[in-house]
Length: 353
Image (tube, rainbow, N blue to C red; front, side):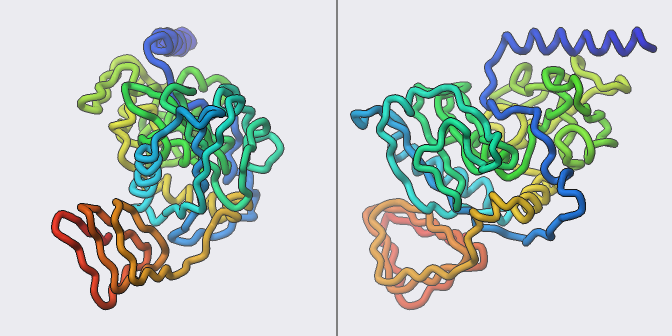
């Protein structure tokens, strides 16, 4: 029996060493972070069923104002983030956007994760806010990864490319925000790179609530899916390569935001992950500071001449119009009320969720 266990470990190690030379990762968020919810020790607060989280977008550029994400890419980043989390009653209000034109900051590659408990990076706090998650968007030629300050945390950096995809405006942004809201990688504690001294999740999920990513309904995940998966079909092709302590093969979900899957394959969280995020928001003083109370936004006599996504808790809109082939998407958690005339000119579109 000892020989069999040793053989399994060596097989996994060989697979990891081989995989590590094949593909880069896209997330630098460390694995050796204690589980926040487990450490609450009976001081657990009940979560609401929905939250609005304030965010700031910081666009990193050179000192002369060149480089960095375009305005279209910044808009796509925000819209992608909102769309990815809206089905789970977590939405984001953009409290502000700025441009940080500084070569020193823009060329930074090493970020010290949060050790002092303020939710931010210890060595990178430019224009940070205590009432929001600070999202630093680096250019397509920087970083080539995303990184959250902590789990949970209130800051992240992201930039560069992976698999031909601009990370800052992709679902990888939602992956990093998932870390900020309390989620671990689906392979946490199970992938051979992280397994030593941790708690590998069994393929049958029997210990899924206490090992792995601490979420029972995420299928056990042993590895970086993109190392032997298919970007075109989002399939898992490693079934024969990874087995757990019982000799059972893994079959991870290749579409979860928190997996190391291809960015274009990411499309959902599980209900267990959503419950974990809601509980983390309710119990983390850092995240509680970012919560925006439910309010009603009133929009009146507005002419929309550019495409825009409008989000809030409740929205009342009246006597407005959409022109110039623009597209307006209105997404209110508790509904939208339209009073009076709302004109949509030919070629323009209006979508109310």
